[in-house]
Picture 1: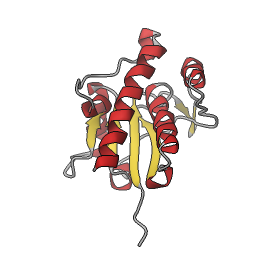
Picture 2: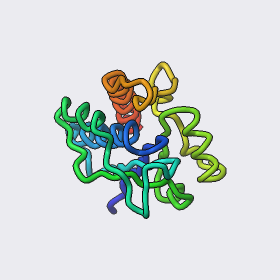
Picture 3: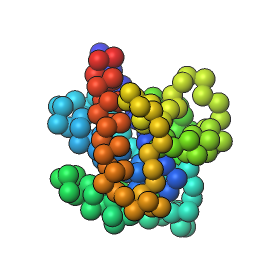
Length: 159
């Protein structure tokens, strides 16, 4: 019997910087680990600020450049809004900071299955991932995301 892929949804405020960086970082890691078929990976926003008339903005150019520096494309990705149905669709719903967690719980409701966490909770030093929209430091954001995604994948593959 074929098992259902593990669904992972990365979430940030606008879905144009951190969460798409995490989405495509994780897709790259599972591809390199030859286990992409075991996962369904996506990203979403807690806000609708980057979505106009139902169409999301593309990934923010500095985030695209940072992904490209690591040989990763996010071509075609557009911001989408987190919705209540995502709780049933995904096994893990991972925010980038505590503000995201608060807004995720507002949108999704309770978390009876313990699906909601921060990305860096999977590392030895749980903390927020700074928003490069404000800091301008996309390299640091990448480093934190890579560390979090690597720890998450290690845990899932052990698990």
